Image (cartoon, rainbow, N blue to C red; front, side, top):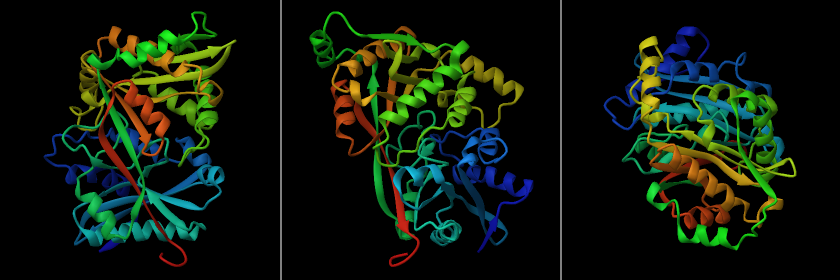
Length: 374
């Protein structure tokens, strides 16, 4: 068994192509766009590297690539939480406990050299990206920007000495549940004259509005487990990436006296199209992508929330009502609310009050990497 740092272009091509061996024949796997993964790991192109660093490794047994991992340090996370946590991400591995252990040991050693005392993951590259392993709900493909993995990854983590750090929930809401009696009752109790105004985000002012969303997110989520603040460059990068695939009719901003106080961020479930492109957006693939977008049935509500000062004003229900009307008017059939921390009772109660049901569960793992128990 050799653990080899990814240094050359050839190494990176092997790193990128390994999942096709892991998921061969799995009908629920959505191949990632190779160009996007490559760009994510390029310090010259991705703003993550303004506040973090990463190194990728391949596991090679008898001349064959059997696993991969990326070791990560996110200074913004550690500053927000006052800890020294390193991360691993982009993990893929055959059902080989020896290979998994060697990969995670390499990631732990790399993080330890940089002063970290715990290893947590997976994160691709942070909590604001894809994160966690799928724990329950292997019977269907993931929604856009949500993870998927073989069930045996959970056994590999435990065999390598990692334990549960936190579980995440994904809720599903079908179109026949969008007008629950509880939502209607909540709206009926609100004053007839509201202090809030609502608008969609337009492509013309996308970058400015994206920074407003980041401001709300950073203020509203600051106390949450695993929170990582969105920097201006992080948010601009994401906004530019979504500009050509977003449906701006389902991205809503709530304002009070001209100040942004809440938002609902929905994205068409692009995985319904990407699952057929095999990781490459060739000219023909782009034609298929454009054609397939018109038949997308689902929406993922990536982030939905309000500032703490508006938590008990009914704004959440007002935002949801407008969001639900928007997705129904566009012909979408279902919506995934994801992800939610298992112990965020307020958010999980709100999702349940809408008629949403938990249908997938995810797990983040960790282990100490310095001192006793490492």
